[in-house]
Length: 147
Image 1 (cartoon, rainbow, N blue to C red):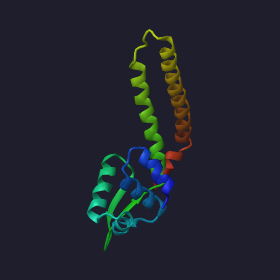
Image 2: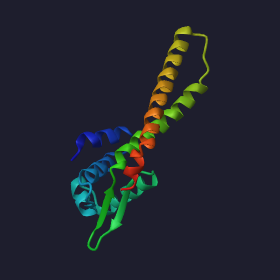
Image 3: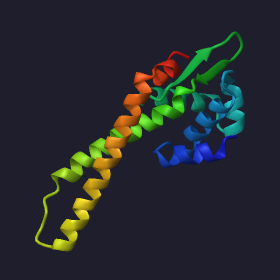
Image 4: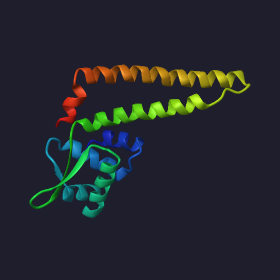
């Protein structure tokens, strides 16, 4: 299993089981993996795995649950890891909005630190926007979504 990838997903707010499901599904790419196999890998029931996949789908994680002739299968695309980059950018934008609404107080050292944090977020977002614009102009992201 892609343990390091699963660990990064946990840090992004997914629970342990969901992160393990995504890591297993991505590792089996381009083939789908059966819900039965995922249940075996995680030690959970098939019903629980299906509910986790549906919950991730509701949260706009690019993952699909499909029926096969004998089993249900879970699949994703290679866009899934890039999805998290785009989500991180959205989260940074929201954080910057919140940080910008914080008023400066009378303490110069605290005000300086607040300005530093805002600057870091602004520069991070500027660079991320440049990268993402470049990826879109080269149609890199679109080609991953087409899978």
